[in-house]
Structure formats: structure tokens, C-alpha cells
Image (cartoon, rainbow, N blue to C red; front, side, top):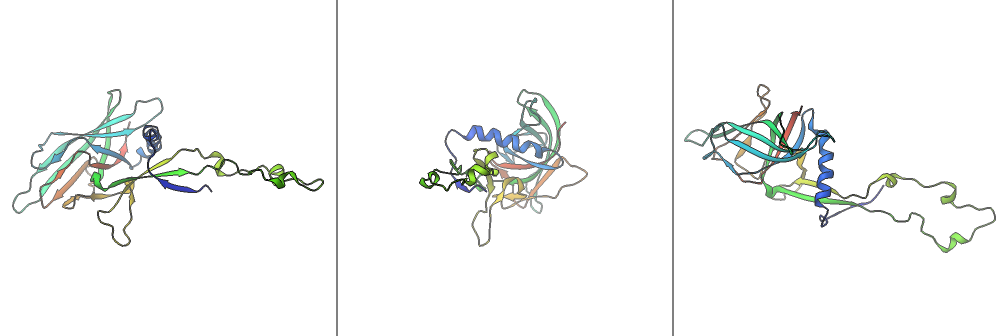
Length: 236
């Protein structure tokens, strides 16, 4: 097994590894799996109106011969600021995707996590490549008559032979304050709201699979750059 050690992200590698990660995410697009998107513009329940569009930046590959999906288009179907005796409400429908070439297609997706950018962190893993498993030593030149070395009789193989020397990026959601036993979570496995204490993401309604509802006892405001995790049901 190769040893793995964490490290900071290397310079000039971000774009290459971003593309690798996009391909690794593409099989997760179907059957209610998760993908990541970023809110391009701020959003709040005081100024937003029904019918407003919400653009989400993403990077989804659905096939080697197809242009990648770079934008998800959501719309506000209900918005209500906080009033005395009632909570603020924001209902969003995600039902359109836009490929890099401009082609639009329908999509079924709902929001399963809303994460403040401040709660997202990155960690890199670098495989340690062993340059020579059998470094030459003086004893290699000394052997009894007819003696053969293990490396000559049985060529050594391991999982390291097929392991590409490519660093792996992990995106994590970490608690605001580290508590005893608190641990970071893989971003795509996160569910609920993080960094927006007063906002609550309501359970999914099977009757409206493409709609997501957020509520709060206060008026809600989400900054540009907020990370969303979406459960994608299908992409034609």
C-alpha cells in the first residue's frame, strides 16, 4: 500500500486536477447522487421576487463527446420576508442546465445542503512514489554458486504499479468551532445548512422533487460564493 501524506495545494496544478475531479464526479449525476454548485450572486428574502432566476456555477461531464454543463438555472417560486408572527420562506426550483456550448436541457435536482464558503476547506493527498523498490547494495554482487535473488526469480508487483502519480483534492465542510469529537465532512456528503445558523432546509416533498424550501425565524441572506450540494435525479 502506498503511503499518503496531506499537503497544501501545489502551484500550477489546480486546473488539471479540477478537470480530473470533474470526470470523477460525473458518474454521480444519476440516481439521486450529489454534485456541487456555487451561487453566483447574493440572494435574500427581502429583495428577491417570485420569478427571479438564480444562476449556479458547476462543472458536470455527462459524456466524453458532450459539452460539459457549466451552469444550473434555478428560479424562485415562492419568497416571503419575515413578518411578525411568521417565518421567512424561500422556495427554489432547479430544472434547467446549460452546457458550455450554450445548449439548454431539462434537469431534475434539489438542494440538499447550503454551505457558507467560510466552512469549506481543501486538503490534498500526494501518493509517495518509490523510485526504486530494489536499490542496489554491495551484497547484490556477492552470491553463492547457483544462488538467485528474489527480484530475479519473482518480479515484484503491487498496487503502486498502476497508481497514477496524481495528487487528489478533497473538499471538506468543517464545523464553525471545533468541539470535542467534531469532525469535517466530505462536501458531497454534507446535508443541511452550514454557516447560516438561522436558516433551515426543509425535508424533501416527493410531490415536488425539483423544489427546495428554506425557512428561518429571521430574514435570510446568502452571499455570492455560497456552496450548494444538489441531489441530481436525472439529466437527459
